[in-house]
Image 1: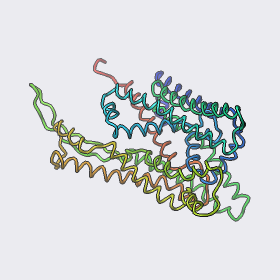
Image 2 (image 1 turned 90 degrees about the vertical axis):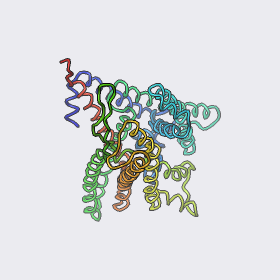
Image 3 (image 1 turned 120 degrees about the vertical axis):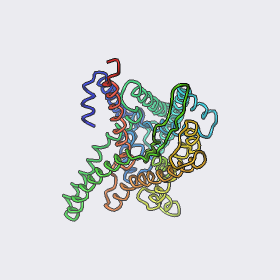
Image 4 (image 1 turned 180 degrees about the vertical axis):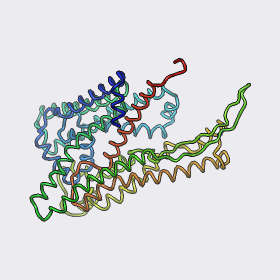
Length: 440
């Protein structure tokens, strides 16, 4: 990867794109430290430390994606999560709503209209999320004005700034798409997660300091901290391996004569990637399971006894029920995503229209059944892989007692996936610029 970036730096056009992308990242980090008016930042920081220590649910998850901006209530506190949620919602609705489905099949113009709908949906979701965040801060006594006109004015300003930050991030991501390198939103997610790496390293250092001051834990943490680093590197290798893995369905095209020319007769394949659903099943599952803990935090107090205490404790990230449901939901959402993205019947019809057949499989219904069976098997392998990566940090922290490490399975998959995707895009642009055509 570093060799690819070094070679790309030598090309003036690519160097400008890389510098532009870095400039956007710098702007993103500046906005992540500019505080929103009318908020007590120190009280909020102490509150989020308590939230993170208790497992935090959705709040800790948002804080991780924004590079700590959420815990500091800065301009970009909402991050790109409203855009991600809007994109997912619109993507799902294109399957359920016929007008949106027609737009998705209208080519470039249809994609532009869907992109515009996604932008408006992002602003609406950002407004809703910013409003919810404001009331959470107000109930936690983080806001500085709490009476009369000042309270109304501060509420309008805080919510408007949160929403504007989300819209600005969406625009910055689109600028990277047009003038920079890589997918803009993915790059911003990558930058936010990388910004939390020093915090994770500091937490590992605190465990080593605790081991040095406590002889009873000396051997324990001096073994567990290097083990965490080794597991982290192994997980990266596994993600890279699975990201490039695919099942190729062979396809043979029949020969056909058009005029005086003969077409077809060649062999090809349909590539089906093992990790085709990406990190979305983990995002869906973690978002649903974090709802109970998030509700508890928005209540402003922690339930101490009774049924609801057991209920909220069961959905804590350290509870066994959370892990079991997490595993099940990841697999279910992986199958759900593949179901709405791939239509075996449509794939079989496309093969028939292009005179293509799968060797040993009859055209029509047998072909669609064969493709569906392959998709089901590959999806299961990919879902089990995602569940393993997502649950590994939880299992490790529960066994070792090293809680509060700001690096989960979701963040590792995003880091590796964005790095690989950006590297491939740089390589493709380098190849395009070095290609010598027949005119040369």
